[in-house]
Amino acid sequence: MLDAFSRAVVSADAKTAPIGGGELAALRNYVAEGNKRLDAVNAITSNASCIVSDAVTGMICENTGLIQAGGNCYPNRRMAACLRDGEIVLRYISYALLAGDASVLDDRCLNGLKETYIALGVPLQSAGRAVAIMKASSTAHINETNTSGTNPVETRFRKMETVKGDCSALVAEAASYFDRVIGALS
Amino acid sequence: MKSVATTVVTAADAAGRFPSQNDLEAVQGNIQRAAARLEAAEKLAEGLDKVTKEAGDACFSKYPYLKQAGEAGENQTKVDKCYRDIAHYLRLINYCLVVGGTGPLDEWGIAGAREVYRTLRLPTAAYVEALTFTRDRACSPRDMSPQALNEFKSYLDYAINALS
Image 1: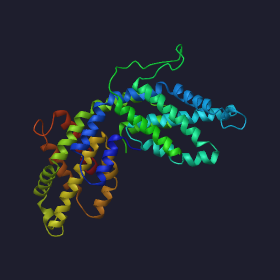
Image 2: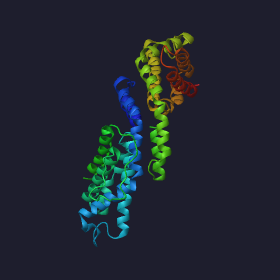
Image 3: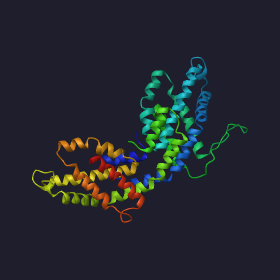
Image 4: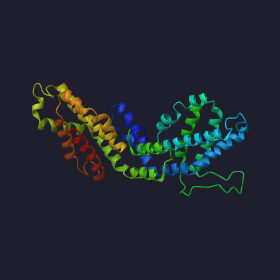
């Protein structure tokens, strides 16, 4: 497993060159934006169960066949497995975002995931759709652009109480990890 | 590769939980100290060739017998390899400064070094002398800021202890 720093080290070692100048500038940026990154990880972890349950619910709303007899979220046992997998994927994405590198996500989560799902008969398209909803919801939480949606009296709606700033780079990075999962499943 | 972020993530993954507040604090602590070690890494990368030359010269002036026939530095090719090895250690220290841990030195420098040197009949004392010279020669503010120097010297000491 690598993080942003050890990734730079491994690629410099392949050239047997010391790390200076340009590569250090990228790492200094990681350090300077460090607190934003930690807030972003916190935005995901603190809202994890909300993000996961919302994504699975959304996936089922769009395809109600999933919870009818014979569907892949029927009965409760399989629905529970679905929620558990959503949480696992989100957890590895939070690790990748903390480390600033996708290797932990690739090695420990995505490697063989598609083959496993095919063997178990899990519909890849639905799984990908749930991850896409998690992406929308997580990036909104990081950027604090989440809204109460169509229900004006939604009581479970919550915004993180952090100082507002430019988080576009982090949002793009987090989105890339979700896209990585979707890519691995399709 | 071991670093604060990967250690924290490994522990969280073993427990199957999201990164906790403690984990985030640990990474934050590492980030706060990062400026000094990145400065040290940058200065070391800039002066790597000069530092290597001075360290190698110090080593051969302390142990002139190394250049006698049958010794580790008997011809120019072998002398060049000595300088290359010193540059190798300094490059690994540069990596350690970037990662903020001893992972690169452990994995690519120290693991198996003793066995290799014994097989090739190379004296580790010569490497210790070169690295010790570098440690004592480096000073602040000429080379880098005091905090950066502290980080740099701690990794030099780590390599010296491993070889001596």
